[in-house]
Amino acid sequence: MEEQEKVVKYLNAIYQNTRTAIQSIDEIIKKASAEKLISELSNEEDAYSVLAKECENFAKAEKIEGLKDNNFIEKAKLWTSINMSTLMDDSDRKIVELMLFGTFMGVVTCIKDRYDHEGVSSELDEILDKLTNLEKQNIENLIPFLKE
Picture 1 (tube, rainbow, N blue to C red):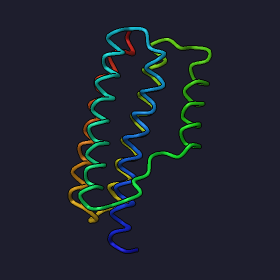
Picture 2 (tube, rainbow, N blue to C red; picture 1 turned 180 degrees about the vertical axis):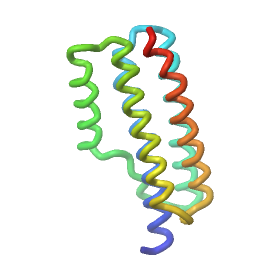
Picture 3 (cartoon, rainbow, N blue to C red; picture 1 turned 90 degrees about the vertical axis):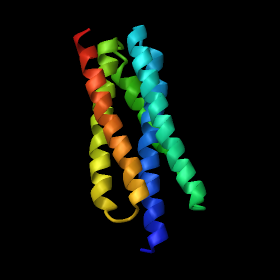
């Protein structure tokens, strides 16, 4: 695989991870009722948006076209999963549980992406590190909401 293709693949992996988080929060925040939780989710969404923008800026700087958001099927699966999971229980605690599951999966994806794209781009490694740290911090921030 050509070097540029590897960079594009790595960039898209990171970008799609951030977009999945943003899309999840967009859908799930509508179901939250506690202002404190809504505020936390809004802050998380803002932080993911900053990282998505970093990916977009990297693509622009490197003249990479075709930065790929999640496709319609992935978005539909995400929407269906959230809505089915909250059909019988849409409590804030359930919302936090779903967010934690998604965030744990985000960390797993980051770890896999690190191994899958080792040595491809130090700049993308830095963005991935920021994303991984954000995911881990979000887990810490969300856990206390399980008590409520």
